[in-house]
Length: 385
Image (cartoon, rainbow, N blue to C red; front, side, top):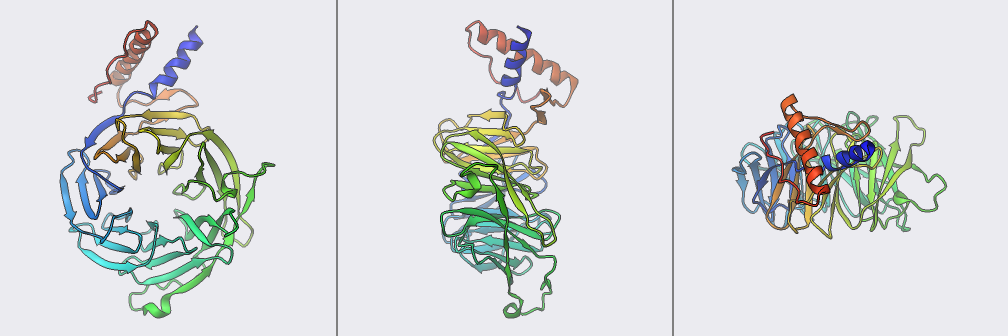
């Protein structure tokens, strides 16, 4: 009997709401500023910087793009912002949202390098293009002979390497790697653009399927892909499941590899997003208003939220410190979630004080007693805890 109660407490504890703020904004793209107090959103063609605590507009730029803003990236310093639609990318001064440069390149994703000196755009044409962040001059074109489409990419933090997942044109997916450390870096402002573009050939990583005939990264029929910040984890989503992989790369000439490590069921996943430390995975479904947080080691459910009240969540963004998550839906709502330091393996729920811990335990126990007796569950816990 005691064991049963422990299991129920563990399961229900991560169901308590962590919503600390709701903002009445429609956001197709979103990204936190490094301080975690401001959120950059793309509202149709317009660009805004919002205060997370109040929702007040700090900066705004009307008609920032000619069409819908599809993606946003913020430089590690917080001084620059990069945005893109399907045809162009733009670099902005974060202080006044003045456009620094417009990059004419078809792209479906955008990112800054860990040192903030390079902006990268990924295209459906099988290339990742790198641009000088200070003025938008082209630097490198990353490609591979057997890469026909790029579905997602990342800079590997702490190194000059780029990983991309894409298709080889034969209905099979794979992971490619480019090492930039051995290249002459044309980051001098005076270098002419025409002579600074270097084509860099990448290598395809070996995929280990562990005897399985066809696992996620081997199939281009995945709905979407996502890398962790350190490039060591890759997530692929399918119609009824989510699959996780590890990427093993190095800086020498030996072949890297991709290994399938975990599969768990999840129907109609639409958006996936790793936490900054790569230990958690945030998932949404295109069939409902669900937002889930999963442990990337075990696949265990850590947190579930349905605060979007019937609207499908189309965008997720985690703050750089990993303490906040923004989820944006189609009904003009942005929910700001507080991410607790919860560890599924030891059933420990982190709280900021002893008083808060005692109150949480009392509320959870009372909730269980009421639900087991058939009564309605208690209202959500007050945010003041």
